[in-house]
Image 1 (cartoon, helix red, strand yellow):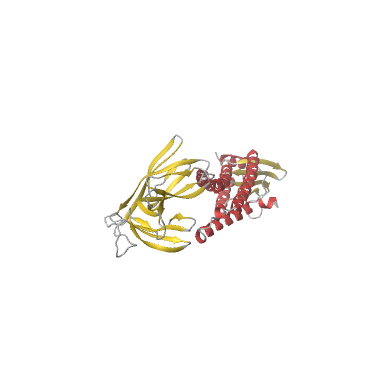
Image 2 (image 1 turned 120 degrees about the vertical axis):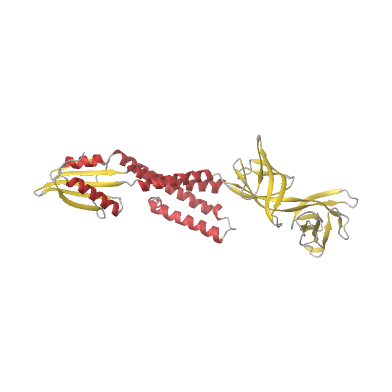
Length: 409
């Protein structure tokens, strides 16, 4: 059972399954976090163990092959040919040596037999392909286990703590110094930009983050995703003394009285209010700021309306009031950490180099038999591990050289 699971065929099957799962999860179930499930992680671990076992076996085989040329016997499927020539075994040995083959010679009562090979470095290139695939799989596993993604909402001028690792034991302080929107001449949005400052210990980074221009800091990357507005809702006593305050975005709520189940919900913030179309802003600029709100009691809307900044809101029968004191933009950022990315990139780099190396240098075995006969010298040549065309060309070249009566120099 274990031997079956550590074969290259099993590795290929597992690779196909992993790729199929990744495609299905990405295209059909984008909201499901399939990649961080225990069963998917177990599949990655199993694949890595399989590739490790296959790679170790291949390393041992290549080390053995590097020490000596294996004895070669022609097998069905090899390119083979027999012809008559007038050369001896020494001439065949001379040809092999000049062509750069490793070989060993066996002299038998019938004649000389040569086992030769060439392109051993190409086999190491094939091994490097296995190592590259294993490296990519390990990088994916590292990112899967230790990486994380988190959405961050931060208002202009606000400071929040963001994690630097999955457990949150390491943190950094993130500050949104400014948020601004750039527009095209026709008034449509060109770009929104977050001026961020992040620091942890003695390390600090300051950068303007925009779409496709993220901020990298100590293993995490912050991407600009979206933006919106928050309003500062202040709960005050009847005399105006502040009791509680909170920055609320659209559809956010503030608990006014937990015992009575009273909450205030911000329905929308409108920077340039039009009474004829209250939910749509005339412009993105704060020319006539209004807040659409609703009071809820026990989950039922009991009062709603539109309020200007600074306007007191009083719920009938309740001795407290609410004031929308200010408004500010906020930035929605995606925080991502994937420590496996450098490992994956190294694996892909190795894969690209090793693949072409293994394709350009093809390892192959060569069998040559030189047998004296009454009609001259019978020569048999057989080639393995080459394409049919390449094997035929090699045999034709050997036939030309070994048919000559004199030695080539």
